[in-house]
Image (cartoon, rainbow over all chains, first blue to last red; front, side, top):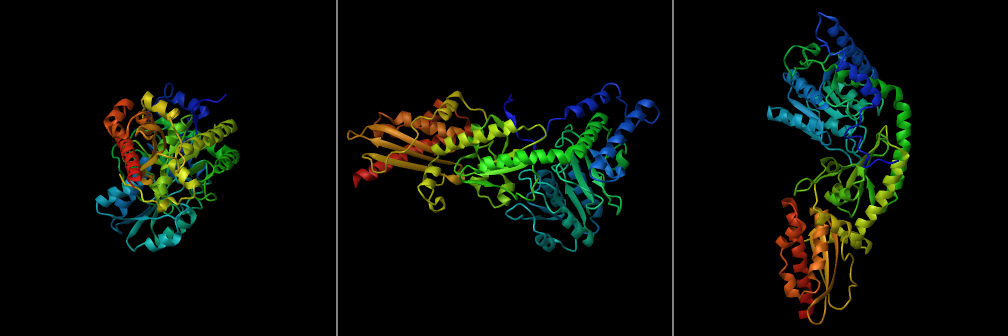
Length: 403
Length: 127
């Protein structure tokens, strides 16, 4: 039995795995102690649970548990990493490099640094969404102190060449931060091998609860940060605030499950994604956004030409997906990520991000393929642009009356 | 975005979708909007010898409100003379469909489509 709307928006958030939820509950009611309470058993057991979860998170990315700092989520991790490193190392230089397709949590944090007097370079990406290492090399200056590049893009799912960027940054003595919110449980992350100094994690993209995340801070060679949140000196002074034991336990369990099940799960999801890909690219005049090889299997981002984005979303309300168009206001704002890939506004508007996850079934994928075929067909019947395209008119040569 | 029932009805069951043959007698076309702005409306009217609009058809690339506005306009212009059709105002369209403020431009575009179709008719019939 299908449940509507069908959830195909796992890159926005994931449901908490029932096994994770079950682990969390006792830490809300029975074992409610403050992990910082050193004087009684309530505190001791909570601290033990927090440390076990720290080991579970570290294990997924092959790091030392001492390198994991709890935060409220990837946004906070990105803020702490980028501002914390920039503030600490500003004596060495005030130039920061990031990429135009980063998440707003990175872009807006870098903008804030610019307001504080730092200089920033926002790298272009290639048409496939990947950064060109030569472009990065050319952007590095003697006063560059920080490079921030995401592991997996949230909109198009492409996997950036983190290993190579890490080599480059290490060689130049530049701190390298990676936003891995969309990467955990989807790609192998080995921080023993990757020359990454700071890495942001989120629980809720990997079947854990919202409101909890972590920042990896490398110890060898040691990376220093200036704290952004001050208080009781928790997390070695890097992030004060009482630890949310139940959330942390949830993140630990979620990451433990991800480590155990990742290989099998990704193989299953890849099959579903390929089915969806073949079923949708069957439709005439569709374009896949982002590289298909250097990409997590969970993501499929497609533009459907000659149909308008908002009416498309309206037509497919039986599935829960994300649109490349933020059409909540009169001024339609096409996705800046798709624009950075060189897509024109029309194609950016009519793009849909399908993201598949742990609980997606083949039946749901079949339904989605069928729905898209019907609705795209219907909207194109209605579309004067489709008619013109079918009549062989090149729409780029038409003089449109601007309004 | 919450749509009114009338918008949803026109969106789900658009009236008078299609195109007339290019060489059909009395047919005039108005095409307004631009793909980059997210709306393109094509409104065609078929005018009889008595100057009354006998039939109308549309195709629209745009949001639900744009589709509904043009669908509604095809119903409204039928049976009107071209001068009466020009009296249809965007405010009437917006009111009928209960368009929210951010969608008023859809009704303006529909009014523009009528004007463009009438202008095309007059151009063809003065020559």
